[in-house]
Image 1 (tube, helix red, strand yellow):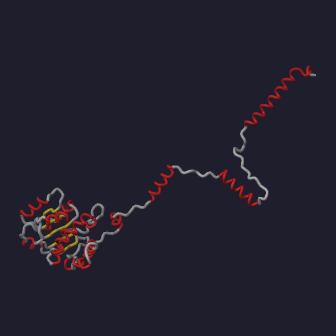
Image 2 (cartoon, rainbow, N blue to C red):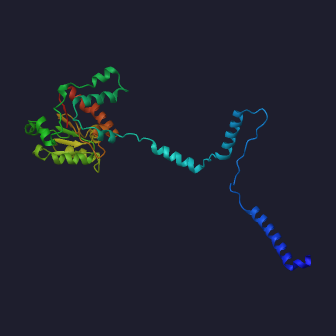
Image 3 (cartoon, rainbow, N blue to C red):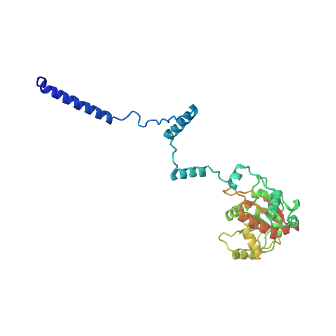
Length: 293
């Protein structure tokens, strides 16, 4: 029989066997449709339906829920975000920019003095620092130039400046916050001062000794400067306040940061010392009047 089938039977049988082996091998190599089979919880004897549901839920959480681990980069990023969310502290410039400018008044100066000396002076001593309303000139309502304001508060200036003959002293003292502001104010005095002489009283590029010599050299009617240098000249006996009649504070003017003279800590400190050591005494004796420009 084998001879009757011939060689074709063997070839057919051999090919069919090989194909079956190859088919089985291919089936083994083929990837499964699901890469990861679901883990089914084993139901044990005595487990209720609720217990089986709980096990299924727990198994699902284990297989499906993966909690990402935080890295150092993530922590650094989150800290930067938190820092960026922090609100910036308001500066004096921010506060003043949001508020409308108001002209200064005698009460503002009185409150400033009381607040400044509250920690170092007793209640009785603080009362001695207070000034009467009669010690103040009319204030600038923000409509005046320096010339128009001085003409209003010093209507008899021409006569006063002619009567002044004393050296190392001034009749009018204008106190401001900075050297550049002092130069600007002196330029604005042109029409008011007439024949009177004005002098710069600030520290920038000018030594105390040089200013003392200038004050001693001739009669000076108007002094324009900063509290620190004016105080230093008084302490060095280069400037006396015997002839002083008017003190004008550059109160309402603001710098690029919207700060007034009394908003700048170092200028405020020098002004308080000047006020206590020289100006206050003249006001108490009714010889000196204060104006807020």
